[in-house]
Length: 155
Image (tube, rainbow, N blue to C red; front, side, top):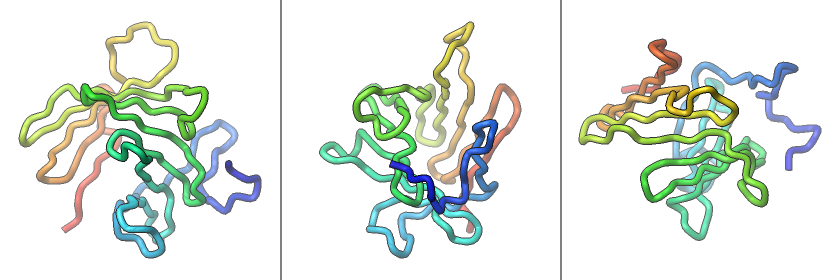
């Protein structure tokens, strides 16, 4: 597990929010990492996150790791196309952090609803909506009608 002297620069502040750089670059080809490990780096090329598939069924469970290989979340894909994300490696007690439901899947468009765990008045309301284009390899993330993030592939 995470040690007290972690050299990961993106640590929690007193209000438990994480400092994450604005620009993250995703790649499956990062020097020093085995082939197929998806890494996210900051503008300086420092690894911020890694995504690792878990055996024995590598398509259904993925781990989001910090640069020191400490598990932050485990992501479990279900047969209905939905995902659940658990805190840590997902071993033992599983604390659900959020759930993702696919609402639209066409040849040119995908829409997802993200629902964070916790007490809520209306379970039918999603917290975030992700709208993406597989061909453009891009997506936009909305909270209500406000755009909060975008991803795109640089030419």
